[in-house]
Image 1 (cartoon, rainbow, N blue to C red):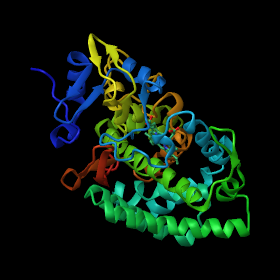
Image 2: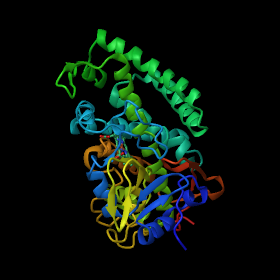
Image 3: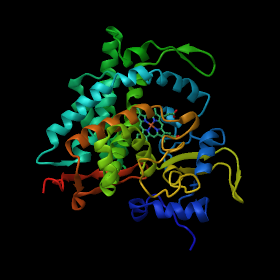
Image 4: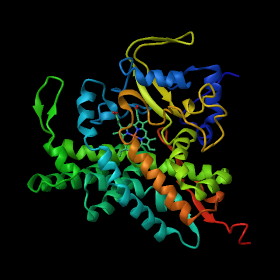
Length: 396
Ligand code: HEM
């Protein structure tokens, strides 16, 4: 039977990996003609496309629908505009700035767990993983504590409105977030500090024509929205996907409890095994011959990251979760010019999240009845993931 892949099909999204295998083996260059979307699924092909940003353009949007085309986000731009834009945003992600966040991340993770872990039970997403990354981005950018609840509120409503494809409500909630950011920009212009907003205010921008200018208040407020879009749901969903992984592989969970030093390697496997971002949308700027098929010029094509990470040509026995696997060059953070700018931060957050979670809940079970999957064509993960502690065998 010929493979069938459709990113809107809930049965496929619930467990896409068997479909991905069929695509890699039988249709490595696939076209869903109904949707007008092409797809690449083999590791080598996805990697090569990431590395060829000229042929595989991001400027028509990187979602499957392409509704982000023209958005003022780095991720949806091609060089040369992408190059100078990335140079500015990169200034936020110095190794020092990221490592300085470790104390805050640990404190916030502990606070959330201690508050929400009641009688050994917690909803990993609602009470923990969805809360942590947005607060970390707020801390990174320098958003004061008193605004963080409002940021969460708008962000929740943006997610809800986007889920319902309500463009008007999405714009209203985004505007609510931007209003907070704009007021902070005005304040930092008057009282510069040692924070990211002040840094971006002072950073000259040299555009494609060599002109030097500075970001205006709107552009500055968008830099926060950009990070919130890229680094909130992704980290939240990675943590929850991996909590499921460690429930399915309790021996490995016990190893991590006994030796948290193994977590750094385990995070790479979490990223490979069930990443939060499965699809990177592109647009072809010329026709491409691959595996005997011609992909035409000017079509939407999706690089299926989730499928690439399960390609047995690159990762032996890919369906197995193995914290000792030496994950060589996974593509879960993309590759090439758009390689995730928040990768180091995401790794740090995930490692600390598990250090703090496993310290409090070394032995847990999933509450299968309460698990709710979020269906979105662009991120894969859960909306609710209740778990509870189980008495260890030694204690029974
Ligand atoms: C587990 C968590 C994360 C995953 C799996 C992830 C994944 C990705 C991927 C696949 C891309 C490339 C997209 C493309 O090629 O079209 C990307 C880009 C990006 N990510 Fe992440 N990301 C994560 C966390 C974060 C965080 C925490 C931040 C910042 C706070 C962040 C900021 C960015 C930015 C700014 C880009 C755009 C880079 C560019 O276009 O040059 N990400 N991410």
